[in-house]
Amino acid sequence: MEFKKSPDGGWGWVIVLVSFFTQFLCYGSPLAVGVLYVEWLDVFGEGKGKTAWVGSLASGVGLLASPVCSLCVSSFGARSVTIFSGFMVAGGLMLSSFAPNIYFLLFSYGIVVGLGCGLLYTATVTITCQYFDSRRGLALGLISTGSSVGLFIYAALQRMLIEFYGLDGCLLIVGALALNILACGSLMRPLQASDCPLPEKTALENVAETYSIYSEKEKNLEENIHILEKSYSSEEKCKGTLANGDWKQDNLLHKNSTSMTHTKEPETYKKKVAEQTYFCKQLAKRKWQLYKNYCGETVSLFKNKVFSALFIAIFLFDIGGFPPSLLMEDVARSSNVKEEEFFMPLISIIGIMTAVGKLLLGILADFKWINTLYLYVATLIIMGLALCAIPFAKSYVTLAILSAILGFLTGNWSIFPYVTTNTVGIEKLAHAYGILMFFAGLGNSLGPPIVGWFYDWTQTYDIAFYFSGFCVLLGGFILLLAALPSWDTCNNKLPKPTPTTFLYKVASNV
Image (tube, rainbow, N blue to C red; front, top):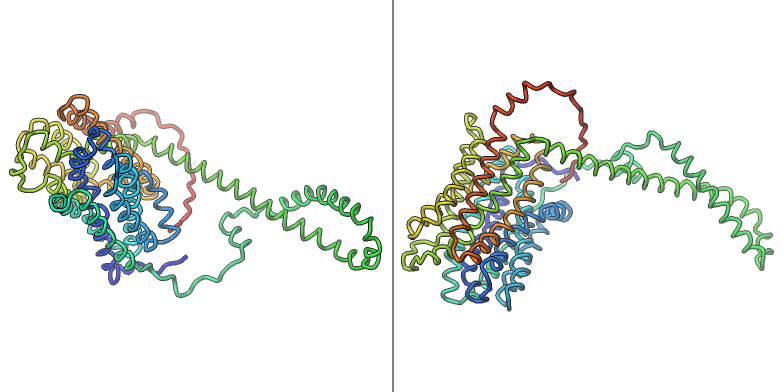
């Protein structure tokens, strides 16, 4: 379907507003799950590692299922997916209030809410990109702050709701708030189709235009017809034996008519079956060729040493960098920090500083004299050091300062698409970004349980955060070594192999 040109304004700003509130409403509770995590530990009495799976799944499932989410949005549209996912998020939150054990929470909060958030994120980003072209960066930056503002507000809101209505009442109210996503989705008006649509073509013309495989059409049809003649002749013999009984007189009366139809029907029948067989063969060949091209392009991506290092870095970053937003409240409680000292929830500090970090790091990335890859590496190294410093923080002030630093550096998500584009090029961005987001979701899902298991084994968070800091530092240094220009100078001294030309065919889809 041909869409009108992106308006870069007008109703597009309504799309930005409702997309901001959609991410605010859906990601507010999952990102501020650290407040609920402390309550779940007391209610169900399970280990920290097992309980941490709830929050990690809520954040990681959406990224792991990103290919499925993209398929749903392209098939059904952003408005329908947003309304359906609003029911998923609200229903999952309300179901979680009736959870009898931690395993029920893994499904209701971890999978249902997490998958709904993934669908909503894909829908909001997709429809925003459709409405904006020249101002797309600004629009995406505005809607991405919705999740950070949601983390800031929901951390304090859920704490207050738990004090007044208990854990179950808090989840019911938060689920009811999530129903406002339905109103946001109803305002996501899709771009209208072009006023002058192309004339509709027949199925054969569409297949021919799509796959361009008709240079050998006549030859293949003749071969298929020749194959069908044998089976058709045996079929005629069977029909002849059946017709020798009581139907002899009827065949004699209609001899002339059957002789006329007999000559035409086999030809049209054989030709139709031959064409369908040919189309199926060529479609299978085309699908197999696309699969080979996809695998070949994936292999070529990993031959890029910077992309391979980036893949390792993002995986290690999410293993070590995500747990603080989930576990910082319990870290403060384990450090015997009194609740009276809490001027603001630590998760709220992380949330508001993440929004600031996204904006400031995004602005820095626009300066031509700043290398975004080195800027991203710097955020990883500083974040790794801050994680290693958490075991030395024994007061609310020091924990709040470290939370602010970690939140600001977590805003490096805003420059990650820049880094990926500079690494692989704009033509391979979608493929490369999908691979990286899958492993980011895997790291999100594994990080908090690993840190929780360390606490269960050692009864302290010290070794857990040393491990988290080591993971982030390791990823940063691997990416730094791969990005150093000295590697390129060494490679330039080696004899260059014969260049190989790869031809990539990209199928455009909405």
